[in-house]
Image 1 (cartoon, rainbow, N blue to C red):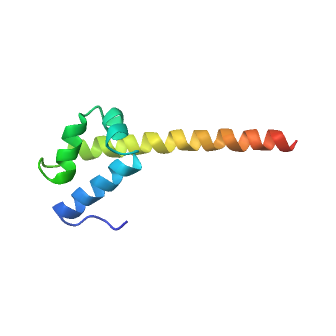
Image 2 (spheres, rainbow, N blue to C red):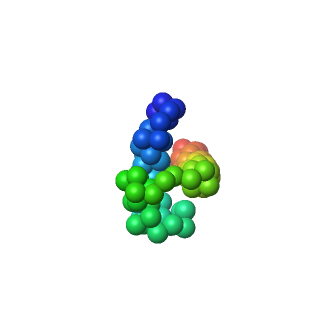
Length: 83
């Protein structure tokens, strides 16, 4: 995805990040924000703040770490099966 250059691009990118986090419900849990608020941010009814974007980036980094650990567990399990 290209770097967002307008407010609309940033909102679209935020919406994409919400989907990467697993959708509105999962993102709501990860961010500690009401689902309706997330929908309002995505729809442009509420402005995106730097804090919201920082929190979203942190949630994505946490998800990356969790996915990496899960993948490493699978790889180790597969290696154990092949021994």
